[in-house]
Length: 291
Image 1 (cartoon, rainbow, N blue to C red):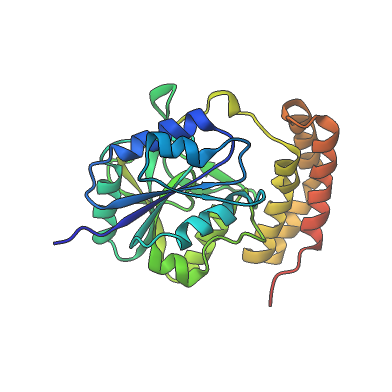
Image 2: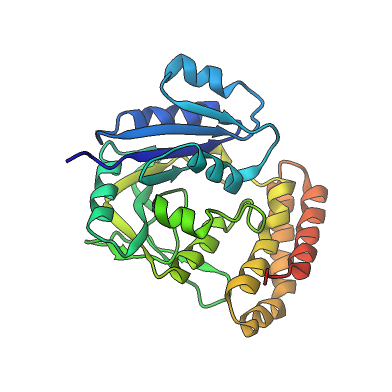
């Protein structure tokens, strides 16, 4: 039997060392049928030349301007043709059998639209960064599990690295690149696959490592804009009104926390990050769900 084709899609921006390490790990996968597409989100260096020199079979697409994560993922999916799409970030390193493990699971679980591996920390390879995700008790917050399940289990969310059935991806319209250009795009997608009657699962035999490195606490003014804005939009799109009301009651506390956090960690300086955080809140409050 011919193996189902997998399209590996890797968005990237200005991380040449991490991208090389990421792609190298994918090329060592033992799965018999896959392609790799790198979507360059307008990096300041020549990603295509870098890939051509080291991995000439990798397809590279470059955005003419910075379009952010959801757009880049959608573009990579549109320019590939695998039955399954394996999305991964450019700071991931995969095990050689990760595609085999995920495809095998998908082919025997038709009610699952998305499956994800256990994600470990590259600097501490035996320590998990996240396994499954559950909804938090506070609206628009989600808990990352760290214990490794013995068998595949359902998960609410997924991020960094995950496999999607192309048929479901296309039916749902992919990632919402307008509502969630970055930050919470996967959670929004998780809501929408459930509206189609599907679930998501984590497969513990599949392994990926996350290279946090120096970018662990990175935030810029663009990301600051979406920090609280997207939680408000998520609640407006997918949850009853009382949950949004509960969230807004605690908004002053959240604003104070993120103003402090972003002021300390933004690469654009505290002023721009703080202004954009507040502008994002305004945009979220003004957001209207499409009828």
